[in-house]
Each structure stands twice: as structure tokens, then as C-alpha cells.
Amino acid sequence: MTLPLLVQSVTWIKVQKPTFDLVGVVLSSFALAGVCVLVALAFGAALGLGFILHARRVPPRSWADDGLKLARR
Image 1: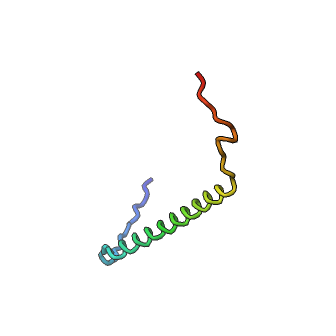
Image 2: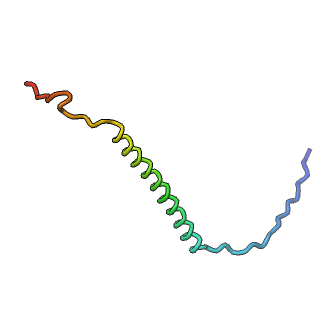
């Protein structure tokens, strides 16, 4: 028993030649760099504010509170 061969057809579609958009690439990279700068600025401000608030809450420790510890031989 033989199977009938199916005839396949190829359809060609005409498309435009792709072009490289250098201006778009440069502008999108500047936009990405701007987003990175804003995120870094926000994280830095939050971290700095956290350090400042932490330093104000915790009283500074003095060596006089625990006494001067000398090295033992």
C-alpha cells in the first residue's frame, strides 16, 4: 500500500529590507541609563537616610562604659 504524495506549495511574500535605526538605539540606551541613574539615586537616598536615622537612635558607645581593656600576656 502506497501513500499518495502531498504537493506542497511555497508562497513568497515581498517584505522591505530591514534597516538599522542608530538614532533609536542611542536614544533607548540613554533612556535606560537615565532609569539606572534614578534607581541608584533612590536606593542611595534611602540607604543614606536609613544610616542617618539609625545613628540618631542608637546612643554612641564610649570605651569608658566598659572600661579600658588591656591586652593580657
